[in-house]
Length: 237
Image 1 (cartoon, rainbow, N blue to C red):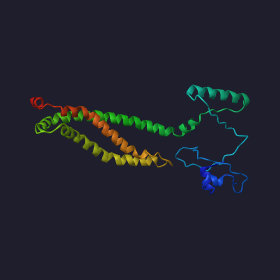
Image 2: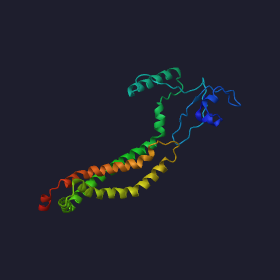
Image 3: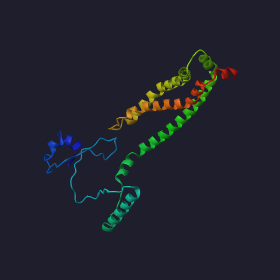
Image 4: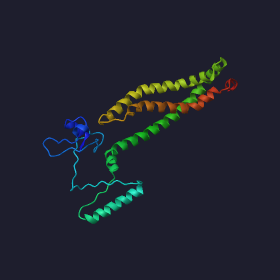
Protein backbone atom coordinates (compact mmCIF):
# COMPACT_ATOMS: atom_id res chain seq x y z
CA UNK A 1 0.00 0.00 0.00
CA UNK A 2 1.26 3.44 -0.95
CA UNK A 3 0.50 6.84 0.42
CA UNK A 4 -0.58 9.69 -1.85
CA UNK A 5 2.93 11.19 -1.97
CA UNK A 6 4.40 7.88 -3.18
CA UNK A 7 1.61 7.60 -5.74
CA UNK A 8 2.56 10.94 -7.24
CA UNK A 9 6.29 10.15 -7.04
CA UNK A 10 5.76 6.97 -9.09
CA UNK A 11 3.89 8.84 -11.81
CA UNK A 12 0.29 7.80 -11.20
CA UNK A 13 -2.43 10.42 -11.06
CA UNK A 14 -5.11 8.55 -9.12
CA UNK A 15 -5.57 5.54 -6.88
CA UNK A 16 -7.62 3.85 -9.59
CA UNK A 17 -4.66 3.87 -11.98
CA UNK A 18 -2.24 2.48 -9.40
CA UNK A 19 -4.35 -0.22 -7.72
CA UNK A 20 -3.39 -3.67 -9.02
CA UNK A 21 -0.19 -2.46 -10.70
CA UNK A 22 3.31 -3.64 -9.83
CA UNK A 23 6.05 -1.23 -8.82
CA UNK A 24 8.71 -1.39 -11.54
CA UNK A 25 11.77 -3.37 -10.47
CA UNK A 26 10.11 -4.98 -7.45
CA UNK A 27 7.68 -7.78 -6.69
CA UNK A 28 5.31 -5.46 -4.87
CA UNK A 29 1.75 -5.20 -6.16
CA UNK A 30 -0.24 -2.15 -5.08
CA UNK A 31 -3.45 -3.06 -3.27
CA UNK A 32 -4.52 0.41 -2.20
CA UNK A 33 -3.59 4.03 -1.60
CA UNK A 34 -3.68 5.65 1.84
CA UNK A 35 -3.88 9.38 2.50
CA UNK A 36 -0.73 11.22 3.50
CA UNK A 37 -0.19 10.68 7.25
CA UNK A 38 2.23 13.20 8.67
CA UNK A 39 4.76 11.33 10.77
CA UNK A 40 6.71 14.53 11.32
CA UNK A 41 5.45 18.03 12.09
CA UNK A 42 3.78 20.41 9.64
CA UNK A 43 7.21 21.91 8.98
CA UNK A 44 8.15 18.88 6.86
CA UNK A 45 6.31 17.85 3.67
CA UNK A 46 4.72 14.40 3.53
CA UNK A 47 7.24 11.79 2.35
CA UNK A 48 6.63 8.93 -0.06
CA UNK A 49 5.87 5.85 2.06
CA UNK A 50 5.23 2.20 1.20
CA UNK A 51 3.32 0.10 3.74
CA UNK A 52 3.70 -3.65 3.87
CA UNK A 53 2.73 -6.44 6.25
CA UNK A 54 5.59 -7.56 8.47
CA UNK A 55 5.66 -10.46 10.91
CA UNK A 56 8.76 -9.23 12.74
CA UNK A 57 7.57 -5.68 13.47
CA UNK A 58 8.14 -4.45 17.01
CA UNK A 59 5.35 -1.90 16.78
CA UNK A 60 1.82 -2.69 17.94
CA UNK A 61 -1.04 -0.23 17.49
CA UNK A 62 -4.03 -0.54 19.80
CA UNK A 63 -7.27 1.36 19.44
CA UNK A 64 -9.63 1.58 22.40
CA UNK A 65 -13.35 1.12 21.80
CA UNK A 66 -15.87 2.76 24.08
CA UNK A 67 -14.46 4.85 26.90
CA UNK A 68 -11.42 6.96 26.06
CA UNK A 69 -11.10 9.07 29.20
CA UNK A 70 -7.84 9.38 31.10
CA UNK A 71 -8.45 6.56 33.67
CA UNK A 72 -9.48 4.10 30.94
CA UNK A 73 -6.42 4.92 28.84
CA UNK A 74 -4.09 4.62 31.85
CA UNK A 75 -5.60 1.22 32.74
CA UNK A 76 -5.17 0.02 29.15
CA UNK A 77 -1.55 1.19 29.07
CA UNK A 78 -0.80 -0.65 32.32
CA UNK A 79 -2.47 -3.83 31.03
CA UNK A 80 -0.52 -3.70 27.75
CA UNK A 81 2.79 -3.16 29.57
CA UNK A 82 2.08 -6.06 31.95
CA UNK A 83 1.15 -8.42 29.13
CA UNK A 84 4.16 -7.45 27.03
CA UNK A 85 6.53 -7.95 29.97
CA UNK A 86 5.09 -11.42 30.55
CA UNK A 87 5.69 -12.62 26.97
CA UNK A 88 8.82 -10.59 26.13
CA UNK A 89 10.61 -10.09 29.46
CA UNK A 90 13.98 -9.26 27.91
CA UNK A 91 12.82 -6.28 25.82
CA UNK A 92 11.73 -3.01 27.42
CA UNK A 93 8.15 -2.09 26.58
CA UNK A 94 7.28 1.51 25.72
CA UNK A 95 3.57 2.36 25.74
CA UNK A 96 2.67 5.80 24.40
CA UNK A 97 -0.44 7.45 23.09
CA UNK A 98 -0.35 8.39 19.42
CA UNK A 99 -1.21 11.97 20.33
CA UNK A 100 1.94 12.23 22.44
CA UNK A 101 4.11 12.18 19.32
CA UNK A 102 2.24 15.17 17.88
CA UNK A 103 2.43 16.93 21.25
CA UNK A 104 6.18 16.34 21.32
CA UNK A 105 6.59 17.75 17.81
CA UNK A 106 4.69 20.93 18.67
CA UNK A 107 5.84 21.39 22.28
CA UNK A 108 7.97 24.44 21.42
CA UNK A 109 5.13 26.00 19.41
CA UNK A 110 2.73 25.48 22.30
CA UNK A 111 5.11 27.20 24.69
CA UNK A 112 5.44 30.16 22.33
CA UNK A 113 1.66 30.33 21.85
CA UNK A 114 1.07 30.19 25.61
CA UNK A 115 3.62 32.94 26.22
CA UNK A 116 2.11 35.13 23.50
CA UNK A 117 -1.38 34.49 24.86
CA UNK A 118 -0.45 35.66 28.36
CA UNK A 119 1.43 38.65 26.94
CA UNK A 120 -1.61 39.60 24.84
CA UNK A 121 -3.91 39.34 27.85
CA UNK A 122 -1.61 41.61 29.88
CA UNK A 123 -1.37 44.16 27.06
CA UNK A 124 -5.17 44.22 26.63
CA UNK A 125 -5.65 44.67 30.38
CA UNK A 126 -3.16 47.56 30.48
CA UNK A 127 -4.78 49.10 27.40
CA UNK A 128 -8.24 48.84 29.00
CA UNK A 129 -7.08 50.61 32.17
CA UNK A 130 -5.28 53.26 30.13
CA UNK A 131 -8.27 53.96 27.88
CA UNK A 132 -10.56 54.10 30.91
CA UNK A 133 -8.37 56.74 32.54
CA UNK A 134 -8.00 58.67 29.28
CA UNK A 135 -11.76 58.63 28.74
CA UNK A 136 -12.35 60.04 32.21
CA UNK A 137 -9.79 62.79 31.65
CA UNK A 138 -11.16 63.58 28.19
CA UNK A 139 -14.76 63.90 29.38
CA UNK A 140 -13.68 66.08 32.28
CA UNK A 141 -11.48 68.27 30.06
CA UNK A 142 -14.16 68.72 27.41
CA UNK A 143 -17.07 69.04 29.81
CA UNK A 144 -17.93 72.64 28.92
CA UNK A 145 -17.55 71.91 25.19
CA UNK A 146 -19.99 69.02 25.52
CA UNK A 147 -22.46 71.25 27.37
CA UNK A 148 -22.22 73.99 24.73
CA UNK A 149 -22.80 71.48 21.97
CA UNK A 150 -25.85 70.20 23.80
CA UNK A 151 -27.18 73.72 24.20
CA UNK A 152 -26.79 74.21 20.45
CA UNK A 153 -28.86 71.10 19.75
CA UNK A 154 -26.28 68.28 19.58
CA UNK A 155 -27.89 64.92 20.23
CA UNK A 156 -26.55 61.91 22.08
CA UNK A 157 -25.09 60.39 18.91
CA UNK A 158 -23.10 63.56 18.22
CA UNK A 159 -21.78 63.65 21.78
CA UNK A 160 -20.81 59.96 21.64
CA UNK A 161 -19.01 60.57 18.32
CA UNK A 162 -17.17 63.54 19.84
CA UNK A 163 -15.91 61.52 22.79
CA UNK A 164 -15.13 58.36 20.82
CA UNK A 165 -13.35 60.11 17.95
CA UNK A 166 -10.18 60.62 19.97
CA UNK A 167 -9.87 56.94 20.87
CA UNK A 168 -10.74 55.74 17.38
CA UNK A 169 -8.00 57.96 15.92
CA UNK A 170 -5.48 56.71 18.50
CA UNK A 171 -6.43 53.09 17.82
CA UNK A 172 -6.22 53.70 14.07
CA UNK A 173 -2.75 55.22 14.40
CA UNK A 174 -1.62 52.28 16.52
CA UNK A 175 -3.04 49.88 13.93
CA UNK A 176 -1.18 51.61 11.11
CA UNK A 177 2.06 51.30 13.03
CA UNK A 178 1.56 47.84 14.49
CA UNK A 179 -0.40 45.81 11.94
CA UNK A 180 2.32 45.76 9.23
CA UNK A 181 4.82 44.53 11.80
CA UNK A 182 2.30 41.95 13.06
CA UNK A 183 1.63 40.68 9.52
CA UNK A 184 5.36 40.46 8.86
CA UNK A 185 5.91 38.55 12.11
CA UNK A 186 3.07 36.11 11.35
CA UNK A 187 4.35 35.52 7.83
CA UNK A 188 7.88 34.84 9.06
CA UNK A 189 6.64 32.48 11.76
CA UNK A 190 4.41 30.53 9.35
CA UNK A 191 6.99 30.39 6.55
CA UNK A 192 8.55 27.03 7.62
CA UNK A 193 5.15 25.29 7.70
CA UNK A 194 4.06 23.43 4.57
CA UNK A 195 0.34 23.76 5.41
CA UNK A 196 -1.58 26.68 6.86
CA UNK A 197 -4.98 27.08 8.44
CA UNK A 198 -7.32 29.08 6.15
CA UNK A 199 -8.14 31.55 8.94
CA UNK A 200 -4.53 32.14 10.00
CA UNK A 201 -4.15 35.19 7.75
CA UNK A 202 -7.04 36.89 9.51
CA UNK A 203 -5.31 36.91 12.92
CA UNK A 204 -4.06 40.58 12.69
CA UNK A 205 -7.54 41.80 11.73
CA UNK A 206 -9.07 39.76 14.54
CA UNK A 207 -6.56 41.36 16.93
CA UNK A 208 -7.57 44.82 15.66
CA UNK A 209 -11.26 44.00 16.16
CA UNK A 210 -10.51 42.80 19.69
CA UNK A 211 -8.54 45.99 20.43
CA UNK A 212 -11.46 48.13 19.18
CA UNK A 213 -13.83 46.14 21.38
CA UNK A 214 -11.60 46.69 24.41
CA UNK A 215 -11.42 50.41 23.65
CA UNK A 216 -15.20 50.62 23.23
CA UNK A 217 -15.89 48.82 26.50
CA UNK A 218 -13.30 50.82 28.43
CA UNK A 219 -14.64 54.15 27.18
CA UNK A 220 -18.32 53.20 27.30
CA UNK A 221 -18.96 54.33 30.89
CA UNK A 222 -17.55 57.82 30.42
CA UNK A 223 -19.14 58.16 26.98
CA UNK A 224 -22.55 57.38 28.48
CA UNK A 225 -21.83 59.84 31.29
CA UNK A 226 -21.03 62.54 28.73
CA UNK A 227 -24.25 61.79 26.82
CA UNK A 228 -26.29 62.15 30.04
CA UNK A 229 -24.53 65.27 31.29
CA UNK A 230 -26.95 67.94 32.45
CA UNK A 231 -25.97 71.39 31.13
CA UNK A 232 -27.08 73.09 34.35
CA UNK A 233 -25.06 70.73 36.54
CA UNK A 234 -21.96 70.97 34.30
CA UNK A 235 -22.02 74.78 34.25
CA UNK A 236 -22.56 74.88 37.99
CA UNK A 237 -19.46 72.67 38.52
